[in-house]
Image 1: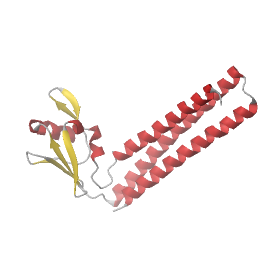
Image 2 (image 1 turned 90 degrees about the horizontal axis):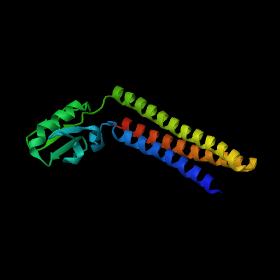
Image 3 (image 1 turned 135 degrees about the vertical axis):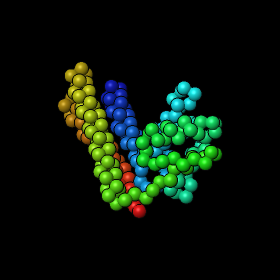
Image 4 (image 1 turned 60 degrees about the vertical axis):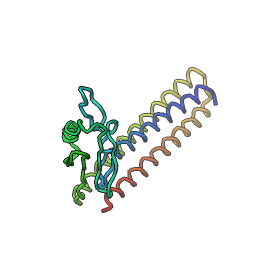
Length: 188
């Protein structure tokens, strides 16, 4: 395999890998009825005038599976942290005792679980679109290489088959991740 072809596959697979990583990150922020610290990733606190991610300025632990306990390193920032949690609209009201902030995750209704599974499927479809876009870019680059390096037709065909196999592998990974997340959301 020529260096240009290797580069084409490395770059394409890297794009596909990023799509999977992004999907998993988005799945981490989805409420599934259990307390998950990743839901706080989008909470940014105005800390002395600087926007600071909540998880950088506090310790977050899971208590009894349904409660997140946030212990700020600087107790004077409690009010700002509470405001940021409310502003982030994660659907849970903060409960502070002056030392820690607790976020109790209420059990999800069956209707809400079904809505969440629709969101999970939608995110999965978006990830598949990213994978297909990466495949299209790889095929386009392969066609450019075919012209610029006069690649034989059978080499081009073999590489198109390899691109499809790579695409299928990542699509299957997405399907598995979606299925896993749906099970997690639907489990009471």
